Amino acid sequence: MPVIGFGFKAVEGKKTGVPGKEEIKINSTPKILDVKEVSVSDITKKALDIEFEFSTTYEPKIGEITVGGNLVYLAKDNKLILDEWKKKKAVPEDVSIEILNHLFRRCLLKISYMSEDLQLPPPIQFPMVKPKGEETNYVG
Image (cartoon, rainbow, N blue to C red; front, top):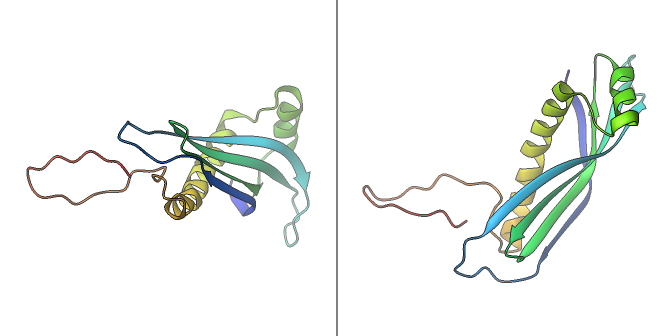
């Protein structure tokens, strides 16, 4: 089923160091914080409001960018998802995959813009044009 709504409610980034010559490891982690059922205008069926946080960290510790928000998900069976959330603080795998893929697409774009403003490497690798025969290591 589809994600029918998405919005950011918190955006925070900070630079705590300057990138040196060492290799920088970038880790991006989505986290579902809460799941609840909501009514959506113009739709007779209830949807799920999923609160999330998405963090990108850098090693060595040169910065961190975190965004948070909500997405609205139209599920086939809200009760099944809500029951699993209450018991395990998790959602079924098929739902999780769809939600996490959506979060990676939307949040990594937002964090990429913020990383440029903070002069940190972007969390995703962009294609680079280089002369024939020259090998280039990606730095960001």
